[in-house]
Image (cartoon, rainbow, N blue to C red; front, side):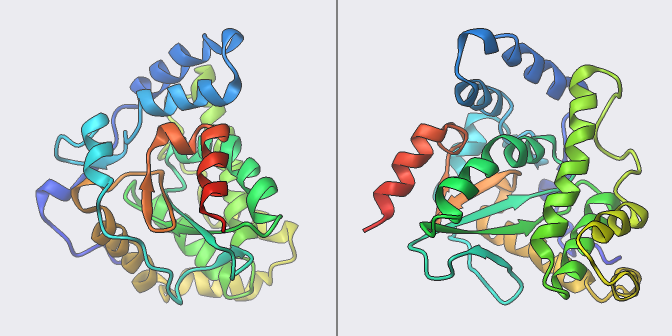
Amino acid sequence: MEQNDIKNEQEVLEPVKAEEIVKVIKKEEKKEWMLPASIVFAAIVIAAAFIYASGMETSGPAAVNQALEEKAPEITERDTVLGNPNAQVTIVDYGDFQCPYCGKFYNDIEPFIRSEFIDTGKAKIVYKPLSFLGPESEAAAVAVECARDQGKFWEMHDGIFAEEYKEVEKMIAGTIASSEHNGNLNLALFQKIGKGFGLDQTAFTTCFNSGDKDAVIAQHMQDGQDVMGQGLSTPSIYINGKSIEPSVWSNKQALTTLINGLIK
């Protein structure tokens, strides 16, 4: 599978150690008894926001600020829109299937977004798969693109994140050291997921093994770097072209206020 051509060492992407992620999550989740869940999640995200950032010192608040005024994402023919295509609000989610906080977003926030804004026609959402955590991330990105050929992008997206979030829960519980690079994101898993929603297995497997999606995956990475520059991080959420801080997108009340304010 082709790698992104950008070689600048300032843009080499490295996650922090898994134990640091777990430490932040556990520290904040201990407070859950005294705070609403959305606030707890916001604290978790802010405390470890942009853990997956470029090799320069762009983690933490500085990384958030750096990303705020970057280029707006474009919706292209490579993207698959979920929701009303004419909705006034467009949500763009840059994520990596191995990123634990992308899993937290999928599990804790995305169901709310879908029920409140996507299903009601107020907004549409686009997921842009980044793959800077290695071969398994690339494989998962290829899987959703091959499923897209059969009109099943979002079904595969949901299936992969649901499976990967099980690994995140194990990491939080301390039964595994990391939810990354454990070999679970592979063709066999994608085939199993696809079987659940009637994917043509032969066509999917041929696509997955062909290398035909390598250029698309590389372009998604390039698009992310064009938008976020040295602050490339996941998850990164944009609403109507503007970068949204974790303190907003991880808080359901704040997110509702923002989105409703954009609807005329």
